[in-house]
Image 1 (cartoon, rainbow, N blue to C red):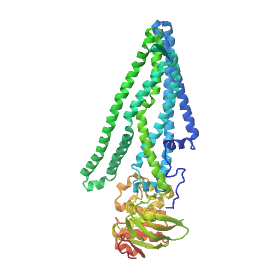
Image 2: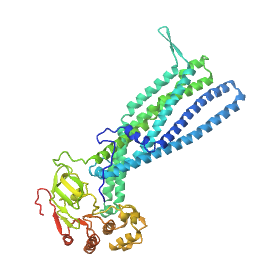
Image 3: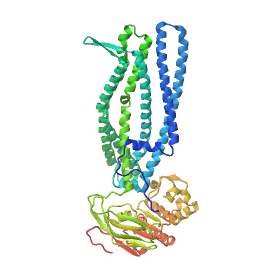
Length: 583
């Protein structure tokens, strides 16, 4: 109920948002010691894994040489070595995964906290929805942040491990396979480490084909995430408005709407399937050929006796590891596509949240300069040259200059669509479209009550004291407020949890909102059809309570009922632009 200040940020609204700008903040944050400690530990585990794989490669050569020589006395020793290496790999695998999950979740937790602050800070969440700046912010904060943290960590660590593995096994393969001599035009040409070059060419050729075939998947995956979120949001809307839909007998319409949205999922999924099928053909061919290809290339040297069976197996294993390392792009392409789509969605979300923090966006189509809300050191709320407009620039209404003094009671009247609720939004600092200025007392406690108040899911006491915490008021204070607003049936249910927007009638919800007012005791109270669901007796009681319990509060009411004129001394008539405005 107090004025908010915009949060400071190092990111300017027009600054280009890169993937690195999304990754970097956590690693230089207050958690950097824990983050880097976990990361270094995971890297160490990966390096030990590479070392064990080198030992396995050596073991493989010794094992197949032993089989070829039928040297039974070395068999028990090699089995013990194998068991030790396997046991070490199992332990390292478990703790590598465990620590990755720990680091990934800590990163996600940190990101979620920051993104919630940016989304909910300074009314950005409202402006994003009002101006339709980004779709499905809930998905971007819940799903996209989780995917971003885990995928970035996984891809980075896998790439690092791949580079270390590549350097290690390139050396082994270069040494084992030796040089290849080919004759061209009667001249012998020696190719040192020829198997390394074959592995590199094999992997690079496959990577190029994967890139060309799979490039469209980035935008397709982005679109798939969007339509899936739209479908889920629509189903949530049906669940939240089940009673209203049932009253209208709107099941068929909702089914048709859901079907149409799902059709977009189906159409886009067929595109995903088409490109995935092409990739699957190439990747399956690539991986299957990789098993036999090194044996074919090395077979001539084996048949000439230059290689033993053990050396041939080591070459095959080393070639597989080297080509697999060169093929990191191929093997990770699906994850890279999902990661890129996630990054694009987060970049867009980051841009709109920061843009809304820095300034309101007024349509360039309008000649209006925007409504300026100033907090001043005065004891009254005033408007000066205030005009309201629609987001597209069309004029809505002209508001005469007013001064709302403490203890005064104003009734705002006018036909539907004239801009009465929009005036409330402008006074709350939620509507920038138009012109003029509003000066509000800087230290005044202001409270805006819409026709349908927000009811958080949880304990009744938390719903009653919203937006303050439940601990702000005692149970006795809450019970008294409920009794005063004729909600005696709920007096003993403060600790009961429920979905109160569903459990309470519209009239009960409006009386609960009135009880909130009695608890918070604002200096300025703005009521936008806040008693429209009440009968005349309860409505009059609520207004008498406000005037008795809040004698110094200014009350501004938007209402159509003539009976409320008795509770207000001042009147503000609002009409659409172009029509006569009566004072």
